[in-house]
Amino acid sequence: MKPSVLALLLLACGCTLAQPVHIGMPLGNSEFKQKLQQQLAQAYTALGYQPQFIALPSQRRFRLLKDGLIDADLFRICQLDEIHPELLVVPVPLDTLRLNAYSLSADKLVNWQQRSDLLISHIRGFKMAEQQEFAGVRVLVNNDQQAFGLMLQGRVDLVLEDSRTAEPFLTQQAELASITTQQVADFDVCHILNHNWQPLLPALTLQLRQ
Image (cartoon, rainbow, N blue to C red; front, side, top):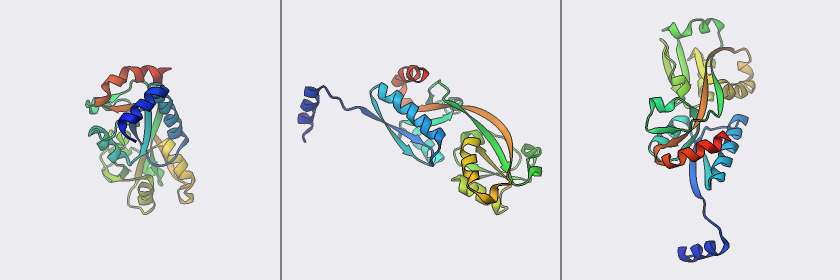
């Protein structure tokens, strides 16, 4: 169908084509992610946009967002614009995530930030973990399977992960049943936009506050 004919048909029926918004989100399924998807979908739809969610690895998702190849990220820490001023944080905390340190040895969690002998793993692009300073060696991986798999092999000592992501994974791994946990920090998370979407920021902020 020619665009001109399509436009006439849309005009005749009073229809419009909603502008798509491409929103990156974490891999895997969780109730937390589904809840935020629904919340963001309702907000964008109410503003006349069509949200399209794309599951991607954290680091790749972040790179695409900065380059403008996706329009938004489902959630990141609310302080992200302090580190990356080219991004826009929608100033409405969506929820709070708890960063934990996990280890098969409780002894390794004692003063772990000051111990240079420890190997500490977390997912690439995971900003809550990237902000943590410690004396040990940082080991970057692509997913929780790799991080905790390295721990089981004795190749890393600690894993940094948020509790809502880690705990459903850990309950399915019988060999990790005896893992020890230590709370590191709590972070509010917000929806993030590429700077090209600056005109939408006020309306989206109001929508998410409702």
